[in-house]
Length: 253
Ligand code: PEP
Image 1 (tube, helix red, strand yellow):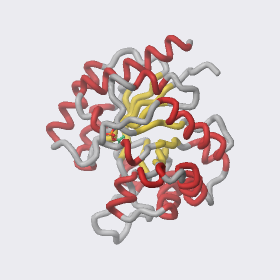
Image 2: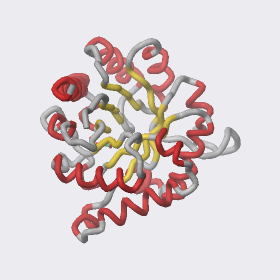
Image 3: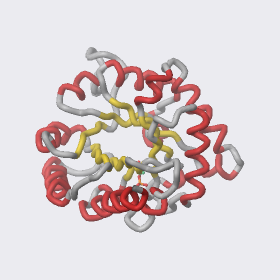
Image 4: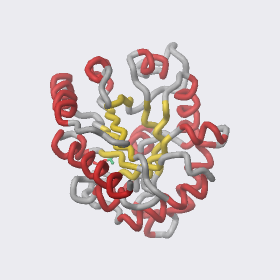
């Protein structure tokens, strides 16, 4: 099938001061070429979100938050509600990133509640799934991902599944420089596609994506883009990944 769109999302994690984030947004906006079907999203830390929202207004880059709380605004000290994110101009929110699961005890059922909270306020969820190295080595990749999806999506309608993005991020590939081979990633993306029974939901790959390996990943039929961590913190490397997506679409078009 012909590829007509790719999505490149940058997860800045717990990095950058407000000044550094503003500078990165500025450099990205200056360097952004004509996107021709590529969608670009950045997820700065909470402290820089509002400034980024103001800067991105009217541009072709969109804004994501890295997390949200599932409850409506209220007495939840330290948490941020979807309503507050939508209010400042976020359109997307990362949910269930492996670092949230590992360091903050986020379960599949919490991921499910966060997805519902995002939909409640009109935010598009980018739901992360992926296996550990031990799970891969003991041939449990597919069953782990099946459980993550089944439990988190249990109360979603099919229409809602089509409205979210999934990011397949093998944990052993995140921040390690060990990217999954395009074939390895494609195999899991195809499995996810079979699980959700729709071709409408974009499935991004995440885990050590960089300017050297991006093109090979984007050429795979079920890889609809990338969630980029480390390489999204430098304008040059993020722009280069965006450039790879543009040229893959051009070659496919
Ligand atoms: C991530 O954390 O979402 C990620 C993919 O990180 P990195 O690109 O640094 O592996």
